[in-house]
Structure formats: C-alpha cells, structure tokens
Image 1 (cartoon, rainbow, N blue to C red):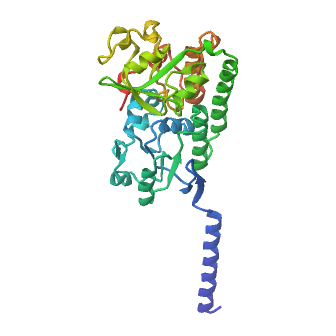
Image 2 (cartoon, one colour):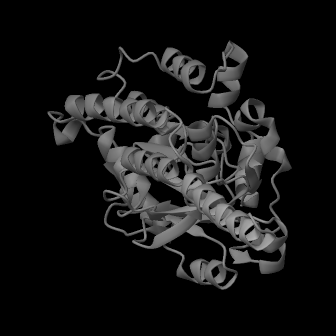
Image 3 (cartoon, rainbow, N blue to C red):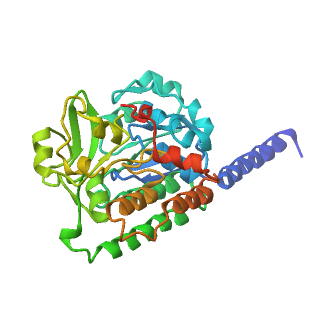
Length: 363
C-alpha cells in the first residue's frame, strides 16, 4: 500500500474512533424544569454548588447528598444557623463555603464568578437574581417557597425531588419524602375531627428587634404549621410577613407564642418583664407560660428544612399535647438523626437542640 493510501486509511480510522468516542461518552449536560417553569441545561458532572438567597436549602442539600463537600457558597444567614446547629457537626466541611458573594440580598457578580460554580440554586421568586445568573451564563435552578399553598412537608419533598433531577438520585430521596408524608398524614388524620373550640390560637414571631415585631399571616409557612398541628393562626386575617404592634397582639390575645430562630428572643425574656419596652404581661401566652422557642437542629425549624417532619411533630405535641401524648419527641428526633444523618444524639445534644443560642438569629 502506498504512503498516500495509508494516510487516508489512518485518517478514516481516526474519524471513526473519534465518532465512537463521542457516541459512547454521551452528552455532557441534561435539562431540568425548575419550580419557576424554566428549562435549565445543567452539567452532568457537578462539583461546585452555590446556594443564593434560599436560606434553608443548604440543610436540605446536605440531607439529600449526605455531604456538604460540593457547597462552595451559601448565604451568610445560612452559615450563622449552621455554626449554631448540628449541621456543622454532621458536615463540618460546610464551614469552607464562602458567604461574601451576596449581602442583604444583593449579589456581587465578581465574587460569585470567583467561586467557579457549576450550578446555582436560588429562590425561584427572585427574578432579579435569575437575570444576574443568566447574564453571567451560570446554570441556575429555581426552587419555590410557595408549593402546595405553603405546605412545608410538600416543599421539603419538592426540593429533594428537584435536587435529584439536577444531581442524580442518591437512593435517599424516596425514603426521605415518604417519611415526611407519613408524619403529616397521621397528624392531619388526628386533627381532622377536632372541634374549633379545642384549637388554641397561636402566633409565630418572625423578627423582634428594637421593639419592632414581625409575624406571619396567611400565605406563609406558619399558617400551614399551626393549622396542621391543630391550632388557629391568630394573624390569619393578614397576609405574608407583616409588622404588628402590641395593640393588635392584645386584640388577638394568643394562647401560644412561638419564636423563630431569626430573632434572638427567648421565652424567659417574656416572663421577666417588658420586652424591648413592650408589656406582654396581659397576653394569655405569657400568663400561661406558653411562649416557645423553635428548636434548631440541622437548621431553623420554622421555614422548610431538612428537619421539617420533626418540626411538625414538635408543633403537634406542643399545640395539642393530649392528642399527641403517644408521640415521644426525643425518640422520634433521635431515630431520625441516626437514620438520615448517621448521628447518635445524647441527652445533652437534645437539650442544645431544644434550647438554641441567640447567636443563631443571623439577620
């Protein structure tokens, strides 16, 4: 065979080999439809993840992946919660994630790009953030916070499901989603026949600083929490997160008050006297010593989190103690942490979980 023919044969063989390599290698990306209805092309191989604006999502990601190693950026408030929770104990590598890429909801594009993210997860309701990610040509997947009328268990489930579509299944998703739905179904079944006059009125305080109080009306997670657990949301005639004054609180006169971990206030502050100049002494919740702080496990327990099923159990036992007397909260929490996080909690751990630090506020 002449040299010219040999070169031609080798050229053809090389082309065939390259074609075969391309075929067998398969595509390098796949598409997902996020909660905002956007079709997003994401890499098949994702090693660097940034979570923007969606404070509880890092905890849910860690639950889904059983790792925090790929998280290179998370919100500062998420980090504040992590450092004062069990998340940093279960996944200490989360402390390596950067927080400086966003401040007060504003994204610093240079800082973001320096993290070299393969994908960004963000709140699908923040259109401005999506525009920034699109301009930077970073694949961005939106996660909704208003799923099934703010049903927290379904939100937890939808987030886990979408993580699976983006990152691939870890053989944990089905089990995690089923666990939350089983808890919810049992609680709803027990509460279904509860007379209205047996449902205490409760309110959840979101932030409390310098005398200013914000709470939640309808179309927010607390509406779901309180009503599902057998109570009545006292501010239910309001909508969203709203600032309220003491006159409104006196009118509601809630039987119970719950404090989120977005504010540093603790129940003992309310029993000791005026709180930031506000007199709570005539409010039934204070008189009956029924002011409660949300626990802090892997994240704050008021918004959706990796501990959402446990939060529903906590609220059900607190709002309807007789109806859920057979629920052993300590055991349920310990079993959940052992099964899904591989952590064996001690009595001291449980005390810390139920009595979170003021420093976890992070706002």
